[in-house]
Length: 93
Image (cartoon, rainbow, N blue to C red; front, top):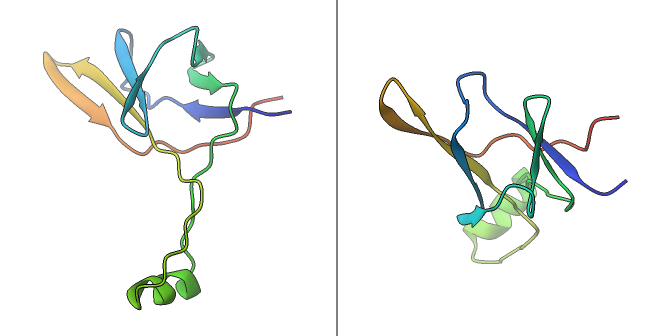
């Protein structure tokens, strides 16, 4: 099953805006909200940099892989807040 799930932090409540890699996403078209999480039909990935890849990067050797970032902007106590780099998981069930 292709897709990804991003659990919303407890303090986030509607209305909120979702960004994938800095690009505004539209509810219904790009994701759905279900059971306190954002569900994407795409296979999102967070790249984990190993020590070896970090070493190569320090010497100017680039290693590029898919690295998606999900951020959520919301209001809390009258102030705009941002939950950055939320954890990405496979879809539930």
